[in-house]
Length: 166
Image (cartoon, rainbow, N blue to C red; front, side, top):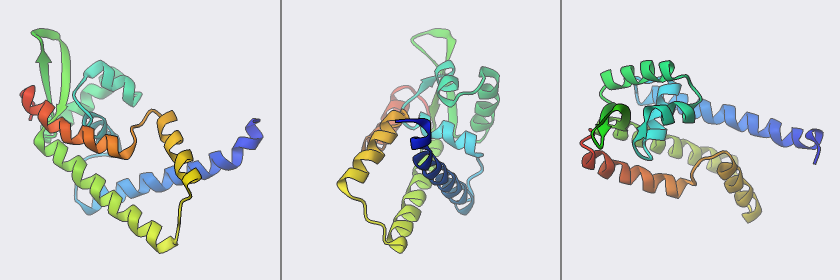
């Protein structure tokens, strides 16, 4: 398939992407959550489990110094906590606190409700093939399927408690 053949799908996905970012921004505003979109993305990644700071920076595609400033703010807001593991003081780990986990859950549920409303109001119905394509897209983008993400989110509280985070 040529790049020209991909253009209609790429254009449609760009529009979907803008819509999803707008939904997230509206959810953050409606819930009066004091985090930026990049900070929220960091919280979402951490919701699947604690990360070393270098690993989180790579996953978010930001410089280590940018991540440090972002996490400084999230720590001040009580949403993220830094910690060491296995006695290694050189490696900084980051994990969600209970407040960070609650924030992610509330925003995700608000987004889910909004998506349900959009699907219902628009009369959209997805075929099995469409769902397969969407799941393959999610997987190719390096994200977890929704049910697996929620399972990780549930376990993140256990991880935090076990590691004395939050």
